[in-house]
Image (cartoon, rainbow, N blue to C red; front, side, top):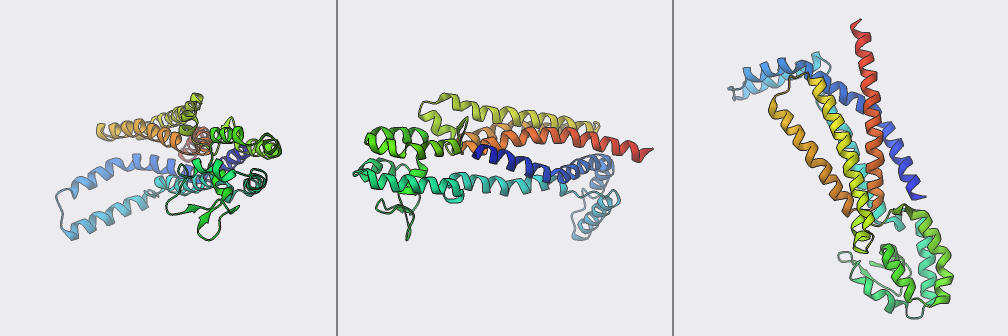
Amino acid sequence: TLGITIIIFTIVTRLLMTPLQMMQQRTTKGMAVIQPELTKLQNKYKDKKDQKSQQEYSIAMQELYKKHKINPLAGCLPLIIQLPLIMALFGVLREASTYIIKLKELYEGLATKIMTLVGDYQVLLDPYLEKHSVGKMKYDLTQMTANEGSFGVKELLSKLTSSQWSELLEKIPQDAANSIQPLIEQKNNYEWFGFNLVDTPSQLVSSGMWIALIIPLLVWISTIIYSKYTMAQNQANQSGQANDQSQQTMKTMNMIFPVMTAFFAYTMPCGLALYWIVGNIIMLVQQIVVTKVLEKQDVVSNT
């Protein structure tokens, strides 16, 4: 199913990023070690704003990083790599019937059967046109699929939410509904993983499925647990050297980020929320394992 595919995708991508996570933690530890020297350097050039002094300051910082083998950009790499993955997954789930071959075939079969078996299908589908219009692209309900700058019946059917499908099936003649039911079941078996992964929690809630609120709630809980653990690790690495302002900034970010993520999870396809939840769990386990590995390496290097 689509849910299993997303979980496997999440596990594989997170495992591939393990070296980057190790590099990120090494960078965090290294920055804590050089913080006194960095502060001394900043104070030395604090009042020197001329070009020559700024160049000297930049060179001195680079030498300090090189001496301690620190790449200050390493901490950003996991986030930089994750953003394209999230955007790509969002794009796939938003246009699932275009990018996922199995769903494309199912929606083409549904469109063909509805156009063949339901005489007034255009009248039945007309109420959904405005709800699912996309920019300048128009729907041509005489076409089965997209053709010459317009969407077809297949594209419109792929946009329908679970509640809209239930509504549509009630209006279709019984013999036609019985004929397309096997395709509907295949579609549901592929898209569902507790919830329809193509629907958004906001769509499910608007149709009366209030239990869908658990999805952004789980995203918020998993994100805040991971954020708190990460913050605790960073504070341990800094060994009290970070100032109150930086600690307060970190706390604020760890409060805001889970809320933002939960909001996005509420308005985006449930499949993306599944990616976030599984990803947070895997990252938490990775963080614990990587911390222990680095601690052992530090012990060996100091003996």
